[in-house]
Length: 115
Length: 114
Image (cartoon, rainbow over all chains, first blue to last red; front, top):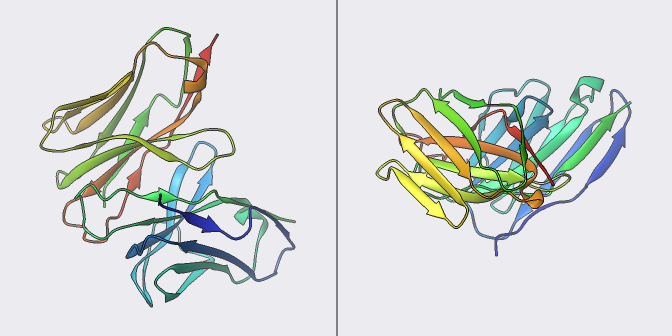
């Protein structure tokens, strides 16, 4: 059974703080993703990584950075948290291979509130 | 990039009725279309998927249809039950994208009234 684990379920941070969201997957997946979920806006891709140390910007990368030093771990970093980054963040992973039916598996989500 | 539109944004049905959620996509290179169900406070989970070489797929009360020419695909739930209440997301992945980049619709909140 695929397991994608996000280290923090609920966080409250102050404006300007540096925030780290950690994600670990145990299925040796090449691809890892960070999505942001807001009501009415669906799942918006922030960043994704297709290999260790490799990353690509998604649709809304502004204000975020990522790190992938090990295959199983993908971190999302908010350099200076702002109130408009209050949201639910979903990590996900999948095997490589576009359109081949290698589906995406999600973590439980991290609810971040910036005050 | 791919653009996926999903309708309706909310859907309310009576228990036992059918529910249909529709998605359109823009990139003709997309060839894999999964559907995810997200219950309140939980992660999205795959419920059914379809590849572009198939027109329809069924799994018990859930079915998905795909019209490649029109670039749209739909989720059909028959004999709805209260536990079907959730947010449903469609997605599309272009075959050219070796990174398995998933493009999601904006979600449909389904409410099944007992």
